[in-house]
Amino acid sequence: MPYRFTFDLSEVPRFFFTELARVSYEKGMHKSLLMTLQRIIKQFRIQEATGLNLSDAIVLIQDFIDLQAVNLIARKKFLQTKKRALLLPHCSRKHMDSRCKDAFDPNIPAYSCAHCSPDCLINKAEGLAKKKGYDVYVLPGGSCIPRLLRTAGYEGVIGVACGEEVKLSETLMNESHVAIQGIPLIKNGCANTAFNLETLVRTL
Image (cartoon, rainbow, N blue to C red; front, side, top):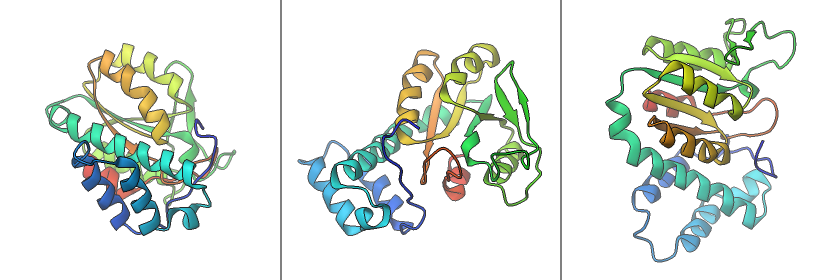
């Protein structure tokens, strides 16, 4: 959990994410991005919804915008790839104890979803991705990614993680000539984290 604060954007209106995408597309055209961030935070009551102070809210929204901008830039290259993987965070599993029947493979290292809970976010995401031909890995952390990239030879990767961790992985992906699309968590923490399935569907 790279952020020093926790957040939950799951109750923020969907239009918030549309607005972020618009701002990302226009990034660089704004005379003052800070003023734009403050406007978005005020418009969508991010401080009230998350309990974050203004400086932490600015960091969070800035990371969301940066990630959207990277996605836009890399989108064409990503769509041209053939061998793709979806990397999911293990902290988004419904259960983080023995009720989760996934199997851990230390050689990757990653978990394999056992489909034990139909309403588990990981189960739903894996089902959507596998229908599109993706390999799916449920990772215990970003440190697993280098070994995965070295051995599997993926051309395109969708990574779901908090915005800060996706940014840290971006350099590694670029060095490996892998086209990346990032999906940020809308609720972070060490367990019961969440991401938007609609965003995943659009990205796949």
